[in-house]
Amino acid sequence: MDFNQIVSVLHSLLEESKVGVLTTVDDRGYPHSRWMTPALLPRFPGRLFAVTGSRFGKVGFIRENPKVEWAFQSRTLDRIVSLKGRAFVVDEPELKVEVLEAIGPNLQVFWRINPKAGDLVVLETEIEEATLFLPLKQESFRAEASHG
Image (tube, rainbow, N blue to C red; front, side, top):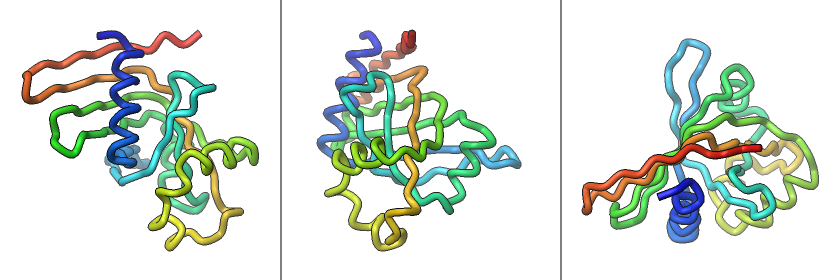
């Protein structure tokens, strides 16, 4: 299974569950995982996008150490996708609008804890490696992205 096929499975998982777990690393080397609502944008293949408040700890963690991991699963746990890559904090109005259009209906909890739209930044992950695990079949597929 190649990279694009794994990303296609990821796309179906995002349509189904709407969420994934983002893991960053703090300045002491400890991992921090949190649920996020990401999106794949067709015009940016090989990249994953989410929004967050600029004051949240993950923003500083990513600026200090951009290596991140994402995890996604189907509701029945028959498909699990994990991604490794480098994340970037992006503060571009046009990209914010595009990401919000893609995930906005799924951000009810986010808006309760971050009501100021002006505080938003985009987290853009350049996917370097994708893994698909099929537990019921005891199969695993890993593929590296070919950026460039």
